[in-house]
Length: 179
Image (tube, rainbow, N blue to C red; front, side, top):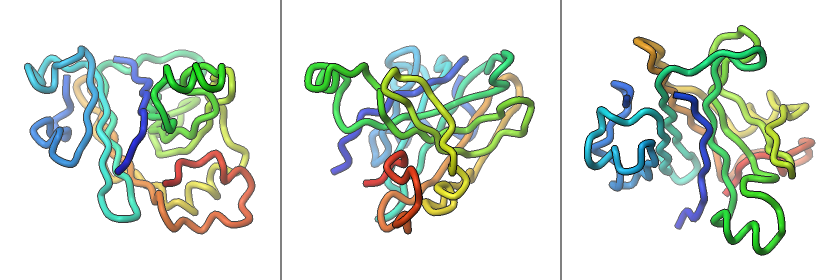
């Protein structure tokens, strides 16, 4: 059984590509405001879902309204994975929640087009680029299978190999989410 704590960073209604009726049916969903998926999906401002799409792959959906722009990030939606609940991590290791965790993201940094990427949360936690991120993304077959950016809504669907990835010998392989 996949036991993860997923934390997401999104800035900003459910995208037309996101299907809230499949939440809880093999797909885990978290959205803001709390409970909007079950009570009134049209009021959801941002959220994530994740599921195993096959024995080897994880599928992640990210959606948000009105992604803001600032000098460092034009658009950024991400999910970070840690092996236990925040309270457990903070008690056992005295590290903050989401510290030293792998991240999957859809980002449009410094004026570039939205694309899939892997990154890493440091012990602070602060999100940083991984030196050989492109090689790692290739090794885990990270791909963006859907992107919608219309009417102030952004939706992104990612898939990533989480078992059997050829990471042997690649630097920073410990900074990638693997089952």
